[in-house]
Image (cartoon, rainbow, N blue to C red):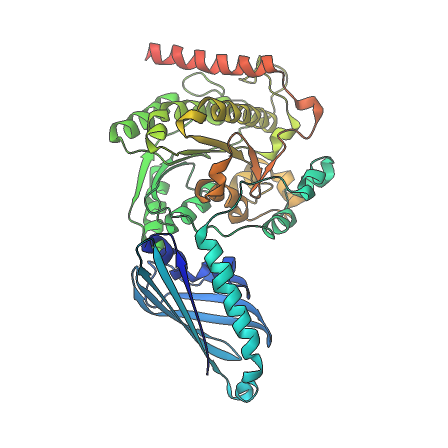
Length: 471
């Protein structure tokens, strides 16, 4: 038997540290040997929970199937991993100290018969890897002291040439991006997140991730039956019971106002607002309120919702707003004199892109306006993701690109990172792709003037004031 032991001191509450280490799927973020880690089952974390961890070790690539044998919340977790070369029992205990907590990590390796005689040769290497994993990887992850996100030189070069920039939208772009990602150990157990468009695609993926992290979720959904199914699914799979629904068709401003009134009446501070709901409409349609549908859902709704929930965002003290835009906006310039897409031949994809361009500009304006309120406002685009919306609304594009499309989980990753990661709260008014701030314009012809930006602000503010007065 080979025994490794490491102890670290941390300036964080026990519950936050335990929540991170007990979910062993996080080990790929900090274990120097782990190349991938996934949970194999669902339900509340506890005895019987299972994980698959792939490690690169001196004996070669090893797949270990872990199972939690003992689980004492906020105190101790014991896992047993079984592989072809050895079995390992990991015991992790977390105990309070005056300034935070102490984490003790013990790993006991039992070698299979064929390797038992030569196992001593691996002792030094295992000790070095164990020390690197705990004293460097895990300690650094839990200290959570990373610099503000910045554009890498690699992506700065890519953004200067359109074909290279577009290549970053693909699944390969995602894989390149994640090579330099930092662990995310921030605590979400006391955070209230409002997420729109949660029943499919990126929104559904985000709902699962945020529920698993323990966030208190308010899901704004159009279809009540789908919303109830999702809520039951999330509660069963994650054990998170703090999930509520708001039913609203966000293309209708009356429904947007209902959500605003409901949440303000409840009075619960909002730590994160994610404006994700969207759809691409062909042909041009008007809502029952007489608004062009793309404009109503993609621009006016997130504008009104965000403005209406400002008191609850401010109440949180350090809130975040995440606006989901689209890489399609790179092809379009702001058209302040045609926000409802009335002129020329209507194209659903063009209308979509123009609304997302306008939402990007509002992101920058909100970031400036609300800086003194502690509200961070950023936008992200998911790259090219294989979602039901893309397959339905853009069948030809989907057919041409289906082999390079990201999964919904890959597309939604930056939404979750902007909502959760500590360093993501250090910058505001930026556009992100794969956890990096990116340029908002790839073509000079799409740049708007300062006058157009101000006209957009005045139009939306005036429309909002007029509507509220009429109501």
